[in-house]
Amino acid sequence: MSVIRSLQTFHSLSYTVNSINGGRQRLKNVDNNDAIFTRYYNGMEMTHTTTWTFDFVKPVVYCPTGIDQCRTEMLYVGNDVTQEVRIGISVRYLNLCVLLLMQ
Image (cartoon, rainbow, N blue to C red; front, top):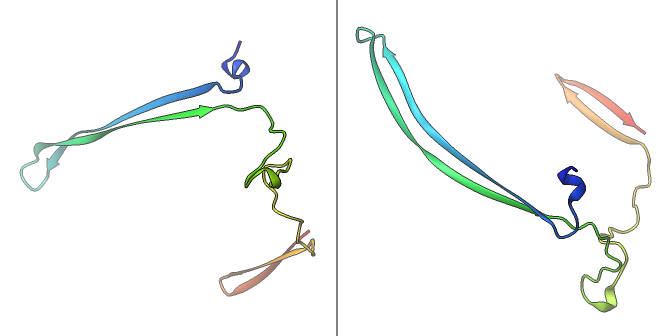
């Protein structure tokens, strides 16, 4: 059975990533008889953990500011205010103007 199919509400999935950088460079100095020298770089180490908690239960009611403001949708942005279904975009490139009409 896959992990995705066994996830249920309030299950959490966490992972941790650890990254270390640094190292060395071997350089040839062509101005000094091709002498080779090494530069060492002390880098940094960083660790970050991310956690997801799953919630598959659709809320029945949402009350953002109190019991008298309850509604069934989580985000309401009002009625659509678009009056025109055609959108015109003018693009100017190399002193040429092109009008694109989308419907």
